[in-house]
Image 1 (cartoon, rainbow, N blue to C red):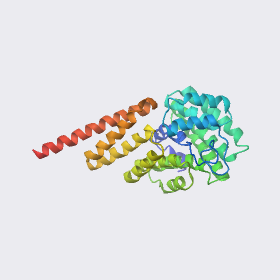
Image 2: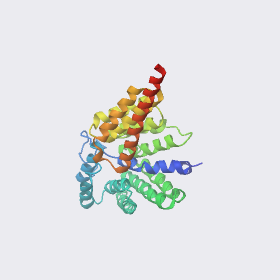
Image 3: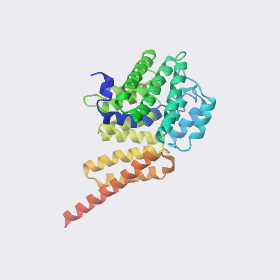
Image 4: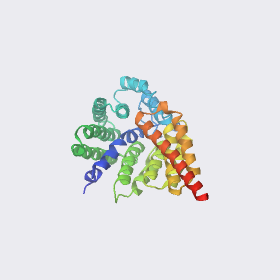
Length: 314
């Protein structure tokens, strides 16, 4: 069974992957003060000029976790930095959070067009965003035509990611995106080992904040909650204004608390959910909906454990 077939061995696995597209794409950049150029948050050496408006938009989303305030910066970037495929990929991702399928198709196509041109001078980033563009286009096809119709797109994703890796296997931007996709495979498919993907992520990917966030998600899904909590805390240290990080920490604490029937841990989960909810105006609706649900279920679990303990004491 080849890796494309494995990737969509069931509709549920493929749907999990597509639903994670905003994270897969938005995990590709953030502000890093140690970069050689402020416009390239990935590389201290051989930095690229990604564009100040694109960089500002990424800072708004990934450092501050504000999806609602970013549109103006992205529209300016689209106008003034139109040759940067990352701009179009981010616009497609934002459209995904709004379920705007026509815009997803439009920006996926623009990502592919600009990436094709870039590949002639920068084969790493050009091929990388050809893979990202086909991934985004695959999300559109999946929604409109179903999983089987998206198989060819996934084959193209792997094809171009492999080409990018052939050009520079240690590139941090490539390893961040490819590492996340590899982790997604390992988490969602049986008999897939996450070890190699995690090593890629830890050894080569950048910036640190997005690496820590990705590893927290990976270890959460692998049910290694102690490591997941460690990386969630690190992400919060770097980006304490981002409500998604409090949400992520709350999810992990909830899983620990449910496993141990520990109301103290569950209460801490509620506190983190409420810190995220305090910034709910920044979050897309689909994130807010699941956050509110998990917040409610955690409070119900605390009440259930308390009632059981009271009955046992009678």
